[in-house]
Length: 328
Ligand SMILES: NC(=O)c1ccc[n+]([C@@H]2O[C@H](COP(=O)([O-])OP(=O)(O)OC[C@H]3O[C@@H](n4cnc5c(N)ncnc54)[C@H](OP(=O)(O)O)[C@@H]3O)[C@@H](O)[C@H]2O)c1
Image 1 (cartoon, helix red, strand yellow):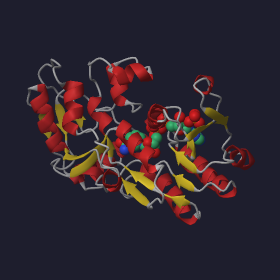
Image 2 (cartoon, rainbow, N blue to C red):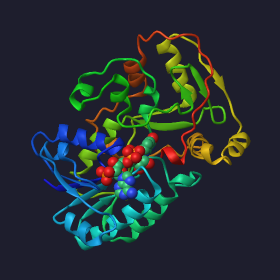
Image 3 (cartoon, protein in one colour):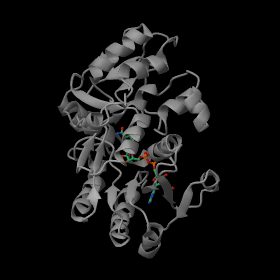
Image 4 (spheres, rainbow, N blue to C red):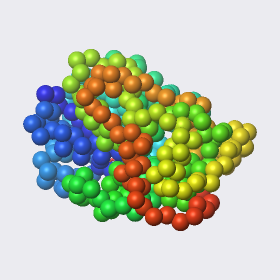
C-alpha cells in the first residue's frame, strides 16, 4: 500500500481519476489524499482525506505532503495552475520527501507546436531536475471527444458517478468539444487529409492504467498507454458505419491551418490538430505491455456504445466553436 496524493482532482479529468480510483480501491490497496484549494465536504464525507492548500504557501504544501509516497497532479484550468502551482508542488515534494511525482501531462509526445502546453514543458524540466522519481503519463487524445452531443442515456457507470446524462458520463469531465469531427452533425474538418494515426484513450482506462502503475516497483521517465490507434479518417469510417450515413469531410492544408492559428481564439485547436496529424499523439504502449489484463476500450466500442442506434438527420456543416485559452 502506498499513500497517494492527488492534486487538482475535483473537476474534469482529475475527478474521473479520483472516482475511478475510489471504485478500484475496494480492498483499500492505497491510501488516498486530495489536495485542493478549498474544502470539499462532499468528498470528505466519502472518507477521502481532503487537505485544503494554498499553493502560494510552501509551508502549507510541505505539511500537506507529509507522509505522501506518490504525488499525482491533474491540475488544469489555468496557465497559473499548470505552471506556478505545479512548480510549487515540486519544491514542496522535495522537502516533504515524497518519493514519486507525476505532473499533469496526459497528452502527446513533448510540447512542440502547441503554445498552450509551454508551461508543461517548464514543469517537465523542473521535474527532471527534482531528484524525485518521476514519470510522464501519455495517453494521446481523450476518446471522450467522440461522445460530444450523444443523446444516449447514462449507464450504471453514470449512475454510480452521479452523472445527469449519458453525455456527461461519456465526456467524463471533458468539456463538450467537436474536435475535428462533429459527430452529431456528421462532419469532419481534417488537418491535412486526416490520415495521420493518433492514440486515443478512454479517460477511465487512463485512470485504470495509472492505478496499476502505482504498484510498479520502478517508474520509467515516460510511461505511455494506448486505448486505440486510429487516424481521423478511420474514425469517420467507423462513425459512418455505426450511424449509417455518409459524413461531409474537408481536407485542410497545413499552410491554411497555420494561418488560422494566428488568431489567438483559434490557436489551440489548430495547433493541436496539426500536431496530432503529424504524429504527436503516438505515445508508447508501455502500460499496455506491463498490464496485459487491462483491456482498454477501442474507438469502435466507444462509438458503438455512444452512437449505436441513434437516429440522425442529413449531415450538415455547423459553425465550429474553437477551444481557446479562455476555455482551457
Ligand atoms: N489528452 C487530452 O485529450 C486532454 C484533454 C483535456 C485535458 N487534458 C489534460 O488533463 C489535465 C487536466 O485538465 P482538466 O481540463 O481536466 O482540468 P480542470 O478541470 O480545468 O482543472 C483541474 C483542477 O485543477 C485545479 N486548479 C485549477 N486552477 C488551479 C490553480 N491555479 N492552482 C492549483 N490548482 C488549480 C482545480 O482543483 P481544486 O479547485 O480542487 O484546487 C481543478 O479541479 C491537463 O493536464 C490537461 O492538459 C488532456
